[in-house]
Every structure is written in structure tokens, then in C-alpha cells.
Amino acid sequence: MSEVTLLDGGMGQELLARTKAKPTPIWSAQVMIDHPEAVRGIHDDYFAAGADIATTNTYSVQHDRLVLNDADNRFAELHQLACKIACDARDANGHGQVAGSLGPIGWSYRPDLAPTAENAAELYAEIVRIQAGMVDLFIGETMSSVEQARGVLMGAGVAGKPVWLGLSVSDEDGTKLRSGENLADILPLLAEFKPAAVLINCSIPEAVSQAIPVLANNGIPVGAYANGFTHISPEFGRAATVDVLTARTDLDPDKYADFAMSWTQSGASIVGGCCEVGPAHIAEIRKRLDA
Image (cartoon, rainbow, N blue to C red):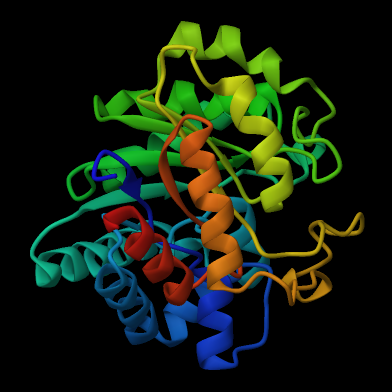
């Protein structure tokens, strides 16, 4: 199945696991400040596992997060550093692409904390202009409402590079965004902005499986990369860090690859992993794709 593009897996949780760092509100950005070599090692491991794409460690490099740790003065520097690390890993691998990660503004899974689409677009455009000279494409990740999706699509388009839209759906009902809106409500936005791909990300695999048929056969390539959390805790927000989230114990590489292969049968042409999905999971998917 060489026509399927294989993304990498999660970065933030992998960094915490490898470095034993304490979670902070700026999450993977803080680990990159303290252990940039760990970021490079994870990119290298994903390429070695067979990934086609390295996603930059910029998900949490947002002004509103950096301010919490008095690190906003390093905003541009951290974006440039993350892109350079990913590009160096790609170059050492000899092939592949780099996707510039655009995480949600406000907080993950909390569209109620997000700015308006117009304000978000300005913030994303700033990031895109910093990254544009280094990355091959952009991926807006974990957008949990139509308004969030509109904001990232508006802002990411300024560089003239491909934009992938990643949507996060309810763990209880994969046909709904985390905002409560129907996933199908995103279809007019896809027709308006025509992203290069639309993906479901950072939701449990079972919900991802429900979501893919809603997006398939709409003229835009579909992808999927699930997380390995049991669920997203209701108290997760600006006052909480990822240590309030619990990893599943039943999602080994074989089981996760079963999900990934089922997504390709449902129409996904891009698969990979999100939080708690590591190099071993990606290697198993690659083995099955090649077989």
C-alpha cells in the first residue's frame, strides 16, 4: 500500500517519557528548551521506523502558552529550532518531508477557550511566516470546532504551501467535534478553503473509526492519527497539564496497527499516531503497509 503516507507518532508524551521531565503548561516546548537532543532522537527514531513525515515540535509553541512560563521572548527562536531539528533529521534520513505543526490556540480540546477565527488567523500567519522557509507543508492539529478550523485555514494559507487540517472529535461520538458540532458541519469549510488533506487526530481510535466515513469521498484526501489516552479529562485546561490524562494499557503496536489498517480500508490515505503512540507503533504500521 505504497499510496498511503505514513506520519510519525506523538512527540510531547514521548519526550516526557524519555527525559522523565515534569509536565508544564508549555509541555513539549519546555522539554525542547532543556533537551533539544531528545527531540532529534525521536525524529530519527520515527524515520527509522518508516515514517514519511516528521512533524515539527511546535504544537505548544504559542504565545499564550509561553507567557505562562515567561518564555514568550523565545517564540521565534523556538519555532526555528524545532524546524531545524526536524529538517536535520529528514536530511540525515535521506528522504521524507517536514510538516510544520500548528497547535490549537487557547488549549487543546477546549474550543471554548479559543480566540475568534480572525484573531487566530493573525497568530497562525505569524508562525507560518517563521516556518515557511524550512517546512514542506503545514498541519493544523487538534482543531475542535468549526471556528478553530476556520482560523487555522485562514492563517496557514499565507505561505502558499500545502495545508492539512487536523480535527479532534468527541471520544464518546466520533461523528461530532469536541465542540459538540456535527463533524459534517466542517464540509462547507473544506469546500471553501480546499486544504490539501483533512485528518482526524488526538481522539481515541474507536472515535477516529467513526469519523472517517463522514469525511471520506468528499474530494479531499483523508487521514487519521489517534491518541492513546483513555479519554480527555473534563478538567483539562489552562490550570492542568498532561499529567491529568491517563494512557491506555491495551493499545500495543499490533492493536494500534489494526486500527490504522482499518482506517485505510475506510478511505484514509494518510495514517500515523498522536499522543502515546510511539516508534514501535509506527514501525508495525510500516511493516503492514509494505506487506
